[in-house]
Length: 264
Image: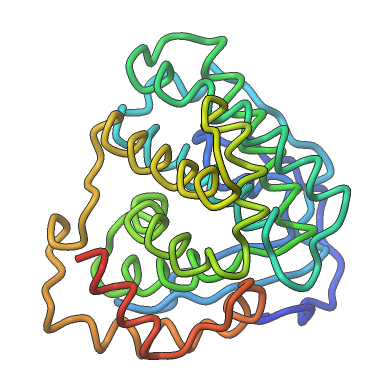
């Protein structure tokens, strides 16, 4: 069943209830399965769309602040990558991504600092779900491609893996996605002014500041990754063709290694 569209059989009714505000998997056709000590595989199939998704903020109240932060940034990455994806970007996914990003950006810090704030928690769940619907229609790209080896090899949580490489992939993508990043800056960094380039850079700075503000690691070296690991990470990242093909700028192995080096 691994891969895209390889599930052929019917299934029982499916109700999904997320307990983190991150993946949005309750509304996507994608499941990521741990297949070995350092490997994960994806199953992508319409059969994975739930019949009912239930978003209950009370089920996320006990989530530690760092997990809330990492999963929340993961959801923001879904929205950012869906909005800038190369092949399947469309008006519906754009609308979902922008709405998701607004909910997430405006509530992440509150949810981390006051974990019992049900209004913030519910906004995060809704934002995560909308981001999930967005990237289900307009798939993720290089941030996720480079994050997967970090999680697979070093067992770093997925959301944190995304956050660690996010600003560096965004900088790499600037030549091809600067206008779209400037548009998203209106949501995440509404005070940003100036040229398109300046506003796009403000988006990246805002995402970096948010990661620092919520107290998660911001460098690969902080999660046990050394310079000697970069070649292996780059090799593994290049295997993520399902994701890399969606990136607004083509990523070579040398590019991937340079992004990891910048994140070190």
